[in-house]
Length: 91
Image (cartoon, rainbow, N blue to C red):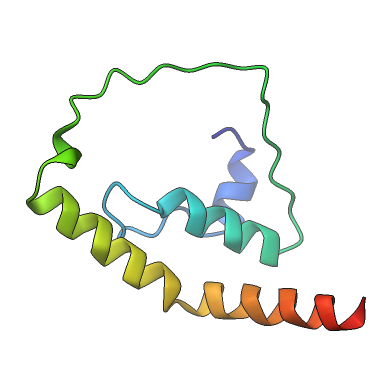
């Protein structure tokens, strides 16, 4: 992710309660709610040399589930859903 330092500060950075999973989704959701756009550059390829530890049961699976629950019950997610639902009704 690339952004201006002011943007990061305006959104109060990443939420430290997320571990490895969904912190980017939470951040982009909060950016969208603040009128900022997220842009995806499909022309760039980045390879992550992962160890794939998260594929095995254990703490990584638990962290993923905790982050999912945290995001889908967060005020940012609820607000985004309400905003999206209102927009669809208006169309």
